[in-house]
Image (tube, rainbow, N blue to C red; front, top):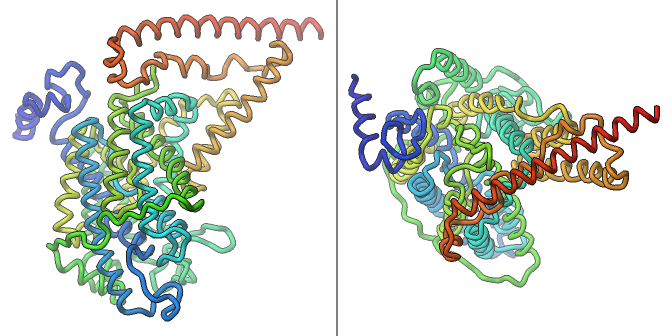
Length: 571
């Protein structure tokens, strides 16, 4: 027995192993295949895959201008000609690096310790861009101030907390049709791969195009215009080919089931990219490259939050404030719900009977509290990260994975120059690999019945093309309701005589929703207040619901048979 096996066995039998339900811990319900060494590797993989958020989130939120201001009549609407304003922005950027590391650390550790899930949390991409460029506006040119926007984020977290306490977020997740949940995971996989192919967080193989929206890129940085579009020298960029080599390396290592394949690929490409006098350097001899290299050379540094801490302005009277709040609410709830359920299905701990996963209530509570704490630090909404799939692919099954990710974010508070310098073409291959792994569930979609298949397909394509998990789910749910409502109306008006030819092959949505009983969505504390036991109440309702669903299903099938016989008789 190797020292790794001995360590795994020792940790599994300790109170830590029993708390996280490691395999061999003796816990009532163990997480199959979970080992301490694998969890460590998975947590580190997630951190490296999402380390880009440290610098990216800081850059995006700094573009909002934050609490900085100037005489806009003298220096213009964006204050770019004011030296004092520029200095203030530089300080804010360092504040946001610290804030991003701090809230990600707290959120990940809380998710791991309390919910025991390998799902990492951090300020969400997309939501931060909406916060900076739409709500607050570039350098404060929007209709809502930075301080007022933070108040909206804080209120969003409080509302989410109330919804989670009452079980409404769990109930909402339950009523999403099974085909759409599966499609969400597939769409997220394509979304991840699409991100991994772009230049902002990937290998740069795909760039934007004015005529075809996207096209093959891969050109050196000096041959890109201000919109990051390749003007010439397509497929000749060194970083792009280094990223492709990283993709092939990770794929080959995974083929032989080499432990830590994703992590090895990321680190190898990053180390190759750090020296300056090369064609694949992450620090070219430009103004931006020089600034990044100067920050990288610091290695160890810590900057306390000075200008963005608790900068709230509680002006709730403007319509723009409420528009921003509502947008944060529906986009974030769909993003977070879709990501968590997709990661749960990908990790194999989804309960197929209840279509829920263990720890979902606590996970939603942690998410809501993290949003509120993040707003105190001056950050946009915190949400679940799809990069968690990289850790799950490495074998992460418990909250130890997320705790390790949180610890790495804590270390990044002091080593931010290193962890913020992983080039996108180093992490891009990992996103592509994880995207391919998440495609395997597409076969579980009910492709036989158009009422299930078409909304699922719309969900799959709208997540990457709409560049939003939330918008993809909205499109899928909307099309599902529209199509199946028409079928239901025709069914009722014809008294069950006119139904689709393969009506009996549809997913039983009513049975799917009630399977396990809606009572299972009610938090345990409500049962305690009512003086009842959850298990007995849920099991009773589950049995009753199952019986009712069987009767409904039998009646619908008989109606379908009768209607078909009637049509044959008429012919």
